[in-house]
Length: 186
Image (cartoon, rainbow, N blue to C red; front, side, top):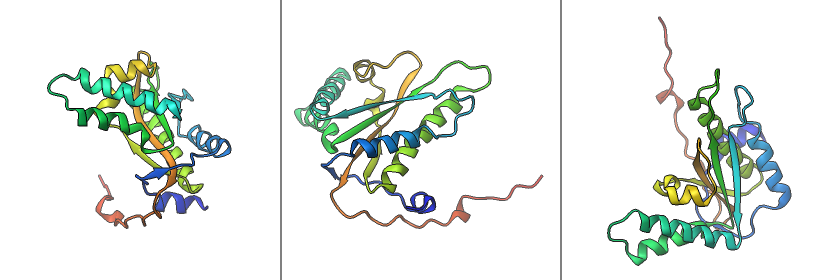
C-alpha cells in the first residue's frame, strides 16, 4: 500500500474479531511506532500487548476501577467494563514515558507517544488490520495504571484495539482542508 493511501484513507474499525495480527504483522506495527518523530531520541513511550485470557484479567481491573469511583455502580456498568478488552483479539496499551529533559518538554514527548500510536494505526491499516484508538476516564484510573505497572511520569494515552474487521472498512470522509488552513502574514 502506498504511504499516501494509508495517510488519506485510514479509518477506525470499531468491530473487530479473530484473528489477531500475526507475529510478523506486529513486528511491522511496532517498527512503525519506533519511527515517530522524536526530538532528542528519548523514545518516550512503551507498549503493553494484551491478548487471550489477559484481556479478561484487564476487564476485571477495569470493573474494579469503576467500583472504586464510588457511587451507585450497577451490574450493567461492571459488565460493560469487563467487556471492554474483549472488543478485539489484541489490545495494545500505549504508554507515554514523560521525563525531565533540558531540551525536550514533556508536552513534546507526549506528542511523540501519540505519533507512535498513530503510526501503529497507519501500519495496521496498510496491512489490512482493523484498528481503533480508545481511551476514556478509566485510562487515568489509579487502579488501572497500578495494575498495568505504570511508574511515575507514565500515563496511558491509548488502548489500541487490533484485529480483523467484522465488516468491510468504510470510506474515509472527505474533508476540505481549506477549513483548517490559513495563510499568516505579519
